[in-house]
Length: 155
Image (cartoon, rainbow, N blue to C red; front, side, top):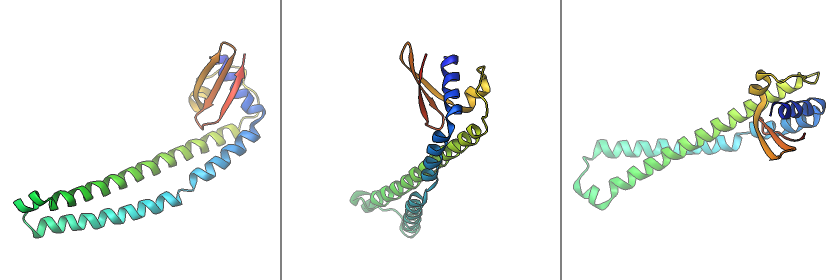
């Protein structure tokens, strides 16, 4: 597997500009989180509005048996829970996207500095770039880097 990985990295190094250009384009698209940020802003507003309603309901009305029986409390509680979950999900998605963009940025930076091919496998090379190696058959492999870039290797 070390030889397969070393060959994949050297393929990348010797023909890095197409891969780097592709990664730059992907990073540019990933870094544009404006639509997601707008959704989060709207979800935050909805959550804040719901929170105010929920707190106001609780502070002004002692929750009565009728509220519980008729579902008024449950309805408001469900609205609060749903709006909070939506905000949490959008924040998690935004964080994941930003981490992915940062990983691609590190990949671009690292590969940009490669000048020579690698003669020996190193653990640093593996931990810095490697994602996975898929065995297609005993002579064919697919190497996926952390950035998402893939290359086929024949041994």
